[in-house]
Structure formats: C-alpha cells, structure tokens
Image 1 (cartoon, rainbow over the protein chains, first blue to last red):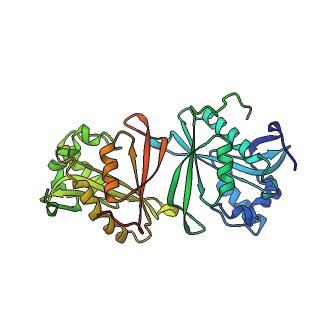
Image 2 (cartoon, rainbow over the protein chains, first blue to last red; image 1 turned 60 degrees about the vertical axis):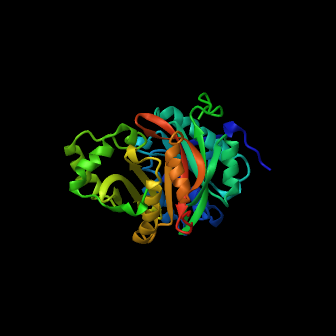
Amino acid sequence: MERYSDSDITLRPLDISDADDFMKWYSDEKVSKFCSWDTFTSKEAAIEYVVDNVIPHPWHKAICVSGRTVGSISVSPFHGMDKCRAELGYVVASDYWGKGIATRAVKMAANAVFVEWGELERVEAVVAVENTASQRVLEKAGFMREGVLRKYFLLKGRPTDAVIFSLLSTDPHVNYFMDA
Amino acid sequence: MDYTRISLRPFRPSDAEDFLAWAGDDKVTRYLRWNTITSGEEALIYIQQVAIPHPWRQSICLDDCSIGYISIKPESSNDRHRAHVGYAIGSDYWGQGIVTAAMKIAIPIVFEKFPSLLRLEGLVEEENVGSQKVLEKVGFTKEGFLRKYGFNKGEIRDMFIYSFLKTDKIAS
C-alpha cells in the first residue's frame, strides 16, 4: 500500500481548472454518502457547485498529494458571539482512503486557521455516527470526542445522530510551527 | 407552589414593569446572551421589538403576571428540524419547580406549532447547576460537554448540551 510522507501532502486554493480531479469525488457515491451534497452526474453541475459554494468560501482548500488534487477541506467560522468557533469539513477521493491523507490535512488546516484567525479558540467537526472512518481521522488528528447529538442534522433528508469532536487552540496536539 | 397559577402566554406591552423586575436583575441575566434591562422604556422596547416578533418567546406568568420567559427558536432552512431553548425566571421564584412546570407545558405546544421540529436543544454553562436541573427534571438528555463553545458576557464558556426529541417522553 502506498504511503505518503507528511511533506507530500499540501493544501492550496481549489480552482475550476481542478474539475477533472474534483469530479472524481463529486461523482462517487461512496464519497457522497455522508456529505451534504448528492452525487454529481455531470462535470458542469460539479463546476457550478464549486463556483457557488467552494470558490467564495472563507476557507476551502484543495488537498494535494505530490501535487495531485485528491480532496478538499474547509473551515467555516461562526459569527457574532460564536466567532470563537469554526466547523471543519473534508472529503477525499475513495482511491486515496486509508493512507493518512485526511488526518494530515485536518492537522494542517486546524493549525492554519488558529494562526490566521486570532479570535478562534475551537475547531469542531460533526460526523454521522455510522461514519466511523471519519471519526478515526479526527481522533488521530488529536480531536476530542465530546458526545453524540441525537437527530442533529438531516443527511439525505433523514434525521441523523452525529458525534461532535473539538480541537482547542490550547490543546497539546496543535503545532503552531507545522508547515502548512 | 400551586402550579395551576403558572401559565404561558405571549408578551404584551403592559408587561413592561413586571418584565423589568426580573430582566433588570443581573442574577437572572447572568447566563443569558442578552444584557440586563435598565429602564421601563428599555423593557417596553425589548417587548415590542424582540419578544413579540419572535417566532416563540412567551412569558412565564404567575397569576397572569410575567415572572420570566421561555423562548424556542428553530434554526434556519436545512436545520429547521432543530430548535434552541432559552429560559429565565425572577430570582424570588428560583428553586420552586416553576420553570420545569412551564417547560412541560411549552414542549407539546411547540412540537405542534412547528411541524418539522424534531429536536430541542439547550446549552447550559458548567456553573449553572440550577438550569441543568430544570432540563434534567423535564426529561432532557445530557449529550456532552462542549469546550469553549461560545462567548457570554465577554468570556468564552464551556457548556453542556442537552436535547429533547419529539419522540422523547416528558418526565413525570
């Protein structure tokens, strides 16, 4: 099984020129299963989604392995009295699962936003209880599992129980000197 | 306490003085996200501009006089199956089961009023033991402890998260 070293994994802005690459995960049912979006059947629809949702997003980057785009990761800050917290989301093409890529990308993204947003103290992630692979990513990245929220969000229209995780800026796993 | 004296109803402008009596008390607003009300005029403005237009913010009344409130606010669009619960009561009335009784009245009403509602949630700061007891006595489930979840009165707070589902039973 291929293994990547930490330096092989980089984050950079996602672009519509990455369409052939991002179509690999946007068209994959294994990937869309736990995502808020439904599997895309045309490149045009996926590009439109990226233009409307990803490009304007405050923090949404491509995950690259040796320069190749294999997924994306986003951090969405809350506002007003909740601006001390932000929500993390990520997706990796299924061919690249099980290689530690998401874990590394999560660590890089969390470190980057704690540095970039001075008021941020908490990064959280909410994962469907059946999505055990994603829960392992967060645990390996040093997030703390805080509880199960019943019927917390609608996944494909169905109320779903979700596990909530958090990483604080003061947690020992946060490494402010990590190259992002 | 004779709980038949407790009722819920929408706020009225004429509640301003009674509203000021509890909402003007720092002890009462300590764990709320809104600031202590400082005058009758401010109380009237709050009732007219915040309480009355709110999707569901009702006065907890003792003999039809306002002594507190319960507020239930569904989230927007994709998350409208979920609503946040807020409540407070004048400090003279603490420890008598009044908020618990009012919440037990409110819950069936809001599940009927908001048909897509499936989950009520309450966020309570770690030190606010009185408020945690209210939710536990009503039958909410404590789901977890959320670290540094949000600001309140200038500080970042840790909070317990509780929920009550449409399918849950109110504790007797």
